[in-house]
Amino acid sequence: MKALFKVVLSIVTIWLPCVSVSAQQEAQPSSLTLKQAVTIALEKNPLRKAAIADTRAASAGVREARSFLMPHLSFSETATRGDDPIYVFGTKLRQQRFTNTDFDLNNLNTPLPFGNFATRFGGTWNLFDSFATWHGVNLARQMNEAAGHQLDRTDQEIVFRVVSCYYDVLLAAKELEVAEQSAKTANSIMDRSQARFDSGLTVESDLLTAKVRMAARQQEAIRARNTLEVSRAQLNTAMGMPLDFPFQLAEGLAERTLSIPAMQDIEKQALTNRPDLKRIASEEAAQRQSVSVAKSSFGPRVNAFAGWEMDNPTFVAGGGGNNWLGGIEVQFDIFQGGAKRAELSRQRALEEKVVAMKQAASDAVRLEVRRAYYETDANRQQIEVARAAIAQAQESLRINQDRYDSGLTTITDLLGAEDAASRSQTDYWEAVYHFQTSYANLELASGSLNPQSPVVMP
Image (cartoon, rainbow, N blue to C red; front, side, top):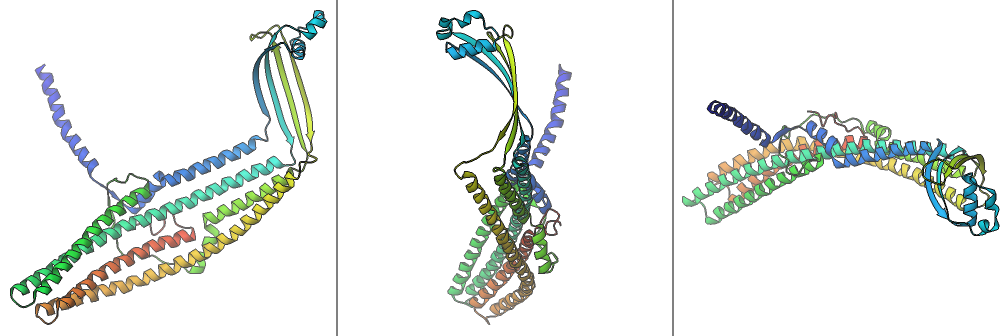
């Protein structure tokens, strides 16, 4: 027993540290690249799951439409009992149990209650319906294609949402860094003002002004931290992950070289590749099929039918009879109060609406492409301006600090230079952020945004 206890103790001693290390690894936030975030979103985002469900429903609609081309079979088992004279007379005939005594007037007029178990197999087949079923199948196929295009567009919108939220986190992290650096600079200015005030070289108002600026910078740092947490929660939502899912971004906000094609090429690409325009085109084709279905309702219909029935006095087969019946039916609606013509008019009106909506969508895409193009181009140029402003603002702050220490300038000038330096840093990172998100928006407008896009790949 002592030997067994020592073995168990040694196993536990080895196992517990491993469990502790594993728990620590699970508790540590994982490193997350933009590519990984997009991949997670395309797997877990609920909007994509809803779009996939729509495609499955549309695919089921195609199978349902095709089913009307096949014969339909049915089975039924019916148990009846009664003393209705016609029912009793007919049931005895079906059971092949009719005898001469059943012609007695008393038996015919007031029969005794009679039971029957009827087993039926029936079938119908639509042989011809003026091609209405075929038009219905084509309509379902077009709607299935429309659902597929909508899924593609949903994927692009999810990718853009993840890219935007990812860069929101990067920008928030940079703004927090700038806010903390500004707080350090403001604290340095306050220390300088305190030293000058203690030496009698400045008035107390300068020191108070520096303290007020220090408090303002601390408030900005607090807001920046909260903004970062909100941005992280938004990114988790875009990925379809829990709001408190821990992660560390593997990338930092930095300038990237992204080529911008000519606007005419982007516009042409958008009109050709945008999934939402393809969806509207499929809906237009489906609506044409709806018009054809309405036209087919004016034509004749030919149906075949057949049935086999077994009637027995008890549930167990035996002691009864069976019969069958088959035939072909031709139907032609002569008058229905104008309902079919009204339906045809409605479908034609809907077709005209879809055509108009298609034109409106194309015009909207052209405008969207131009707006995204000029916004991206403007953001690209603003990066160069903001980059130059950083160096100028930092040099101005250095000069004003030296002049303030020498008593050649006021605290107001120094704080103004500090504010300009902080704002130049924020403007630069915002310009970098806006350029990359606007580039993703440009790809979204052109219909080319995907997990392999330049803005997604490192």
